[in-house]
Length: 296
Image 1 (tube, rainbow, N blue to C red):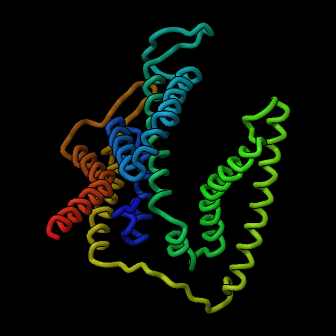
Image 2: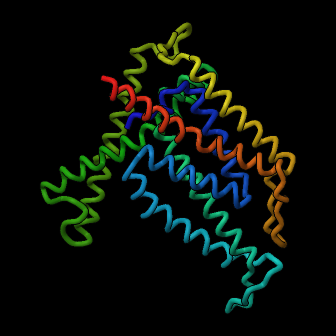
């Protein structure tokens, strides 16, 4: 789908996702985890609609449940003992709480990455880092582009093989394995041919030659300056607030949190504004578009 936030300058997009990735991975306060999870989940639904809901229910929630159960089974730290396992190890409130927090953190990061894949396309990545690290940026952009392309092509090959009765769902187990190997062989051949074609195409276009220029459609306008002020300002305030203990939370040996003060409240508020910014942008642009349509 068309995203209003994707229309902003690549610098704004990359800055935003860098900030939310860092905050989601390193801030383990329950309030910050809740903000990150809700905003990431909501934004993924805004961008990908039913596909995001299906992915979150079928894959993300079971992953969260598994992560929450695994931690107390192996981590027995904590001062509040609730029970003892059959192995004799204690089951503590702190380990359960930390397991839930880690599960929420993992789900938030996965949701943010799904949003990142929609907004930060390969051409944006090359635009930002092509002149700084040209080889690495090209490899990363091609790798990110290859995964969805490989998935789409393997679906085409599987459907073609299914029409002639050679799909992995047909025949005995041995026959299914042979059909799967056949499909894999086709995909490897296609991938190698595609790599050769890409290399030849880049060579004919003069990639790597000195003095070569690149076309760019991105312009840093007034709208991007406003977004930079909001995202950069709130992000800087959140990082500084966390540095000065505004998001402090300890799980072991006993749980201890920062006191609820105007300073800590302002840090959480700034983090909420940062996390929800693209959703607000999407809704604002949709509203403006509907108002313009109503005037026609």
